[in-house]
Length: 496
Ligand SMILES: Nc1ncnc2c1ncn2[C@@H]1O[C@H](COP(=O)(O)OP(=O)(O)O)[C@@H](O)[C@H]1O
Ligand SMILES: [Mg+2]
Image 1: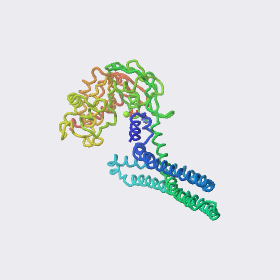
Image 2 (image 1 turned 30 degrees about the vertical axis):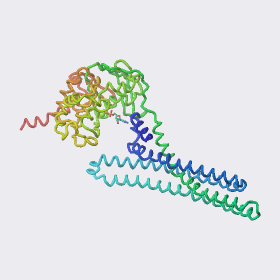
Image 3 (image 1 turned 60 degrees about the horizontal axis):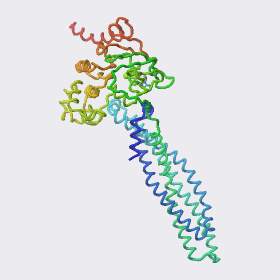
C-alpha cells in the first residue's frame, strides 16, 4: 500500500515533460502490476529467505558439531549451487524486465482501445487493435514462459548437485561407520539432518524466481519514485497579484534542436488587460500559455509576474494566481458541484458554486440534469456534450476567481449562442483581472485590448483589431477568410 501511494504521490508532482515521453499504460502498469510484484517479493520471498536460511544454518551447525570432516565434503557442493543460482538470476531479471515492458504495452493498447472505442469502431480498427493487443500479450507470454523455464531449472540443477554431494557423503560416512569411527546414533542423526536440509534448500533455490522478479519490479517502481520532481526551487510567495505579466525574450523548445516551441517572446500585459492570441494551429499559442504556470520551464528569458521572476515563486503560490481553462477539458467522475469546486476550491460556498455556474451559462443545463448539482458526471463527463463540459470547466475557472485567467480555446465547442453568453460573462469576469484568450473564431476576440498573432513560435503581429486590419497582413488575411465564410450563407439567403 505504501509503495502504491508513494508511486501515486510521485505521479502528482512529476514534470509535464515526463508525461510527454511516458505512456499512460506503462505508468498504470507500474502502479498495478510492478508494485504487486515488489509486494510479493517483500512477503513470500522474504519469509522463505529468512526461515529457510535459518533452518539450513541450524542444520549445518548441527552437522559440523557431529562431524565436521563429513560436513566439509558436503560443503564442496555449495559453490556449484551458488554458481547455478547466479547464472540464472541475471536471465530471470532480464525476462522480468521484458515482461513488465510488455505488460505496460498491453495496458496501453487496452487504454487506447477502451477510451477510443468509438473511433476504433467507426474506422474499423478492431483487427488492428486486436493485433496490437495479441502481439503484446503474446510477447508477455513468451517472456513468462522463458522466465518460468529458467526459474524452474534452478531447483532441479541445484538439487542434483546436492544429491551428488550426498551420495559421496553417504559413501564416505558408510565407510567410517563400517570401520567403527562413528557411532550408529551419530550416523543416523547426521543423515537425518542432511535429509532435512533438502526441503529448505529446494524452497530457497526456487524462491530465486520471484525474488528476481521482485527486484526487477522494484527497479522499475523505485526508478520512477526517484525521478526528479517538477523543479520548485522558488521560495517567494505572492499574495493575490495584480495581473501584471511580462515575457522577456522567452524561448522554449520541447526537444533540443527541434522545431516546436516558442522563440524570443517579449511583451508586457498590464493588469486588467485582455490579450488575445491567434494564429495558425501549431503556432505556439498553447506552448506560450503553458509556460506561465511553469508546466514547462523556458530555456532562456524570463517570465515576470508583477515584476517577480516566476522562477523565484513557489509553484503553489504561482498557480494560485492562475485560472486555466485548457484545450482539453477534464471532467472528474464526481458530482457537478465537486467538479466545479475542485481541488483547493473544495468546500466553497454553495451559493458561489451556483454563481460560477450561472456566469458560465452552465446553470441552464445543470438544472435539467436528474439531480442538479448533485448529479454524478461519470467517467470523462459522458452524458454531457462538448459545450456543456467546457462550460463546467469555465465555471471552475470562474469560481477560482484568480487574477490571471487563461482560456485556451475554451469556447471552441460552444455553439454561437452559448459562446455569445460566455462572451458576456467574460466581459464581466475580465474586469479587474488579466485575461489571455486563445480562440480560432476571430469574431469572438475582436474586442480584446490587444491581439498577438503567433506563427511558427513567434509573435509576428500585435495590436488592436482595427490596427491589425489596417496593417493588412496575416491577421487581416485570417479575418477575411473567416468573415467571407460566415457571410456566405447569409448572402445566399439574402439572394433567395
Ligand atoms: N508536448 C509536446 N512535445 C513536443 N512538441 C510539442 C508538444 N506540444 C506541442 N508541440 C509542438 O509545438 C508546436 C506548437 O504547438 P502548440 O503550442 O500546441 O500550438 P497551438 O496551440 O498554437 O496550436 C507544434 O509544432 C507542436 O508540434
Ligand atoms: Mg493549442
